[in-house]
Length: 375
Image (cartoon, rainbow, N blue to C red):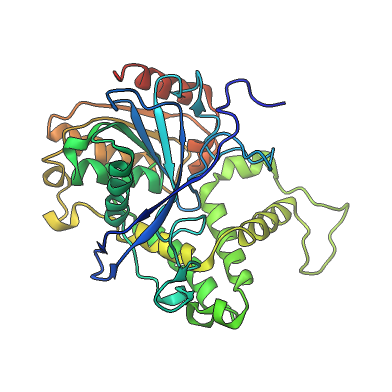
């Protein structure tokens, strides 16, 4: 049965941006495509638009279902819809697949018009700042001059933060959830191990696997398994799997024995069938590079000096990948600049994935904050 508060059946939309994009790396894309979805209605004043930025493995499909795939609920469907925390009766919500992704926007798996072949390894490195620039072009396409709010969790929260830095006049409110102003050395290390799993796969061919009609599935599978461990907490894994065996006794071999092993391999296989390996490399590198304070000798307070938006910053107690300490450093830098900021550290056992869960107190916090945003 379809959720009565669902936005219902949705259809992706496409826009071709025929304007050169100079990336922070120095590379230039002469044009590119973006795929996006919208929910709710843009009001006459065009003042009720909310941009939702996705995390590493996310995409534009954040709410509703596709007509031909009834079980294809958007990845944040519990958060977005009529009467939900981000209420589509009030807001015009936009989800966009980032440049470099693999769900419709131009990325490594796309065909390069200059060569007639997949971009593959030739697709340039992208940064969070580059994504913001493409979002600006989408906003112009939709006739939106200012967002009521920009929202995101994890890497999406980093994008929301970057929006307030690059275009302070275009964002009234920012919701930064389970995010950080930069990655720790440990996080960078996890990302590099994941990339090495992909890049050392014999089927990778230096990123040009499409030319060889193959795919580094084993490497991407391992990368996702590693990443998935970091998204969960020890408590959540213990509660869900413990040391449960699939069978009655040890099998004394190296096949799957524990339920947690079965779960991780399932998640790895599922992801490897849906995601592009080169896009995974790009997304993790964008995470590594993000550091708005780098240009200010590491002083986040100085980096935030021109921010105009009000903020809601949320963290989760069991999130060890993007710990509450990282959110608190963002809050301090905002307060140093006398920015209006609300902060909550939410008790949850789900680890980093908490921002995706339908936790009552968490959703109540978002709903109360969004309710006070005028449209």
